[in-house]
Amino acid sequence: MPGSNELFELIKSLTKSEKRHFKLHCRLHRGRNNYERLFDAIERQQQYDEAAIRQEFAGETFVRQLHATKYYLRQLILRTLRSYHAGNSKSVEARQCLRDAEILFNKELYFQANTALQKAERLAREYELDGLLCDVLDLKRSLAQSVRPHQFDALEAIIADQQEVIRRLDNRNRYVDLIIGVSRSVMSGDQTNLEHEDWLDSDTNARTLEALVMHYNARYFREIRDGTSSKAEQTLQTLIDRLEAVPHRIAESPGLYVSSINNFVSFYVFNKQYDKAMDLIQRGKDVYQQWTLKSENRSLLKQVLRTYTIELEVMRNHTLQSTAQDRIDAIATFVEEHAGKMPRSYALLFWFQLGYIYFMRGDSKTALHWVNRFIQTRYKQVRTDLQTHARMLNLMIHLDEGSQFVMRYFVDSTRRFLKKHGRIQPYETELLRFFSRMGRTGPLDRRSEFRALRDKLFPSGESPLVPESALAYIDYDLWLEGRCRRDFSTPVEITPR
Image (cartoon, rainbow, N blue to C red):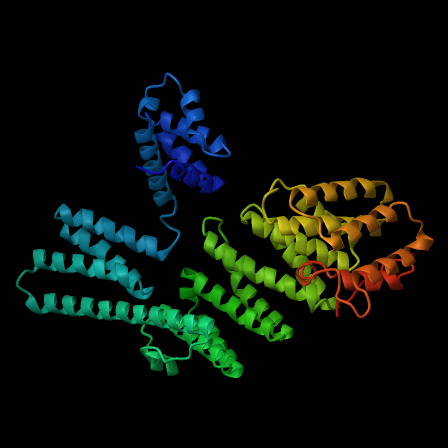
């Protein structure tokens, strides 16, 4: 039986379209009304409360065996998910063909079984689904024995084919061992040669696309470990080129491509090659735009979102040239379109990043739009680090907007939030005092107030009061530098160092 929270977690993970498909399935099958009622009751809960469920359905027959009802509801949800996702991937399609072939074989409808089996085999070979291909060849041998039991050469050929598939699986597993071993050696600094490490000298041993990707990633990790950055760059470039040469495969398994792009972009960012990083991001996005990003594939969506967050990070800190505006606006559009599909932590990060970037570019109105989206969210316990800095950014924006009459309210609100989530840091205390004063300060005195704050937060010849961890979110030094030069009569754009 499923654990107390498994059914709850499954229901909460469903998308709107998956829930709709489940409900349609229930309504097409009379007698399943109780399952839909239980589904709705659990969906309404914020935390699973079985006592509340029993109380809501007190007197109902099915609640007497609630554990069994929950089990069958879970199985029903999984069954409808299988039908809903049946056409979403070649792997699922091939498995369904194999299942059809098994059913037809057991009915001794051998010709029809062979037709379904041929399609399963074709898909398994084309997309290198070797685990599935082993099962296909098992059934192919059984079918041949039933139809042509004395054609021994054909049976031996099927067995030899299956052995070759098993060797490819073993080849993949060896690369898994290699990438784990090299990754461990990077973390530990141990440069002892690994078993089969000589395989990394050439990609000729990689017998599938998945093995090829692991080969180049393992080689890249080894080159990073050995300090050969130029070789590492070439390795990643070769991997991207090899993947783009098989577009049908990256369309079927896009995670291989997206993770490879992200690794390469991270390499460029680490080495401060920001222009190359931005060019590569755009190259990846040109491919991404050919796909429909479905919320059901959360792993892929997260990897694509990581690409966009890296792009914003680069533009935020290093590449805010005038030509970046179109890219920033494009990301903002992307965020709006996919906000409902994103994990909460990613949505908050995007809203904060966009608010900060637009603010630093002098567009306070757009910045306030994104910060308001952040502050008004219900995700109160998610990314409290961002929650803190978003509230500080909100104060900075309202100060620029000249909204003195709301400054006191926002200062008090921010102080309450900081107290609720831990001790207020010294630099935060100074900032709150500053914003409180600025709510009562006239335009002529503002520049001197900014200079006084900068002297406190970044005293000459002393360690800054603002920790590096906070500056990674908001560059207060850059902000204050710009405001200390400002005449407060016209908005100015601050260009990052």
